[in-house]
Image (tube, rainbow, N blue to C red; front, side):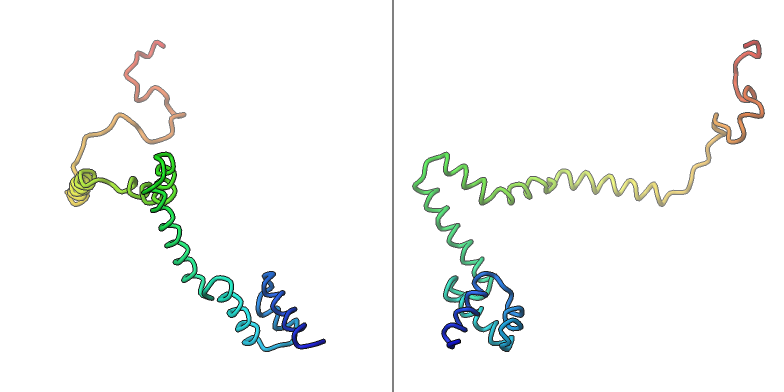
Length: 147
């Protein structure tokens, strides 16, 4: 097998998504060589071998395209773009409580804190009785004994 054929097989395997460590083991080449070949292919295809850098560039291109469409497109396109691009941000902003709600929550928490720290208040006996009700069902009722 010629070196060009061998290199083609390695590159083709990487292009098809075979992990670099598997390619290195399969073709009995150093892992560093396989990862370097994978990096070279990604740079050739995407302009970078760093996924974060590629995704950042992709986001910028999408924003530039959306900006062009917002400036020159029709209102329907603008609504679709705003919904797609800013939908998550708008949704997250809607979940944030308002300052009035935060103030009311703080006031309630202060009152609850005061209740927690206060001395317990003694109350009279309740009308509920704890015990075995099968002993005398009518012992705590205010009804007549005729029934």
